[in-house]
Length: 134
Image 1 (cartoon, rainbow, N blue to C red):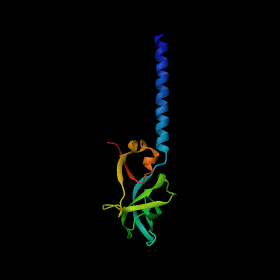
Image 2 (tube, helix red, strand yellow):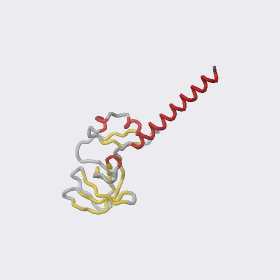
Image 3 (cartoon, rainbow, N blue to C red):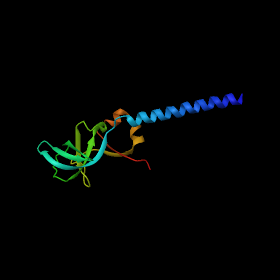
Image 4 (cartoon, rainbow, N blue to C red):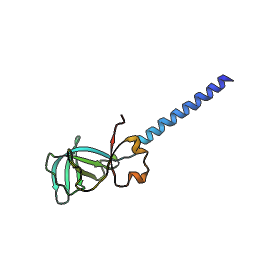
C-alpha cells in the first residue's frame, strides 16, 4: 500500500514539475517591451524625430518621443515594443541624463514583478525598466 502511495506521489510531483517548466517557458516566450542602449549613427529627419541608431550589429530606424534633438554618437535609450526589432522603435532620451523632457513615470521592476501586473497596468503609459532579481 505504501509503495502504491509513493508511486502516486511521484507521479503527482512529476506532473507538477512539468507544469512549472511549461508555464515558465510560456512566460519567457511572451512578448514584452525591452529598453536597450544604442548610438545615434545618422540624423534622418530631426524635425520629425527620425534617427538611425546602432544597436548591437544592427542599424535601426528609431523615432524620438520627445522634443529632444540628438547628434551622431549620442548614447540613447531605445524602447523595443514586444521585443520585436521589426516594430516601430522609440528613442526615450540620452543615457546619463533626464530620459524625457516631459512627465513620464518610470518604474524599475524584476521580470517576475512585471509579469504579475495586469494588462491594464502594463499598458497604462508607465515605462518599465526590467532588472535581474537580486
